[in-house]
Image (cartoon, rainbow, N blue to C red):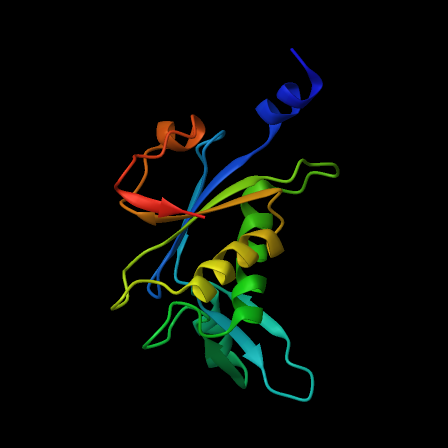
Length: 166
C-alpha cells in the first residue's frame, strides 16, 4: 500500500447537513453523530465574543446580556453571516473530531438542505465550499441533492443525475 493510500484510510470523513433549524454532523468512520440547533450566544461590541453554541446558547442569552444568532437563517439565502457560520462549523468539526494532539484534516461533504427558488447561486456554492475549508477540511465537497448514504460517501459514488457536487 502506498503512503498516500495509507493516509487516506486514516482521514476522517464528515457528512454535514445544514439547515436553519438544525446542523447535523456525522463522522462516517466512527459513527459519532451531533445534531443541534445552529445558534450562538454572542456578547455585544466593542469586542464580540462567543459565549455558547447550540442548545446552551439560549441559556447563555437568558443569563447574560447577549444576542442569539443563527448564521444559517436568512429569508433569501442559507448563509446570513459567513464569519459566524465558519466559526460555528469549526466549533462542531473540532468537537466531533476530539482532542487529538496530532490529527489528520478530514474530508467534508457539506450538504445544504432545502432548495431556494431558482437554486443556489455560484456565489452561495463557493461560500459553502469555503465554509468547509475554513472549518479545517483537507478536501471539501458540496452536495446539492437527496440525502446520501454512508456507503455512497465513503466510496465516493454519488448518484448521477440526482444532485450536483462542487
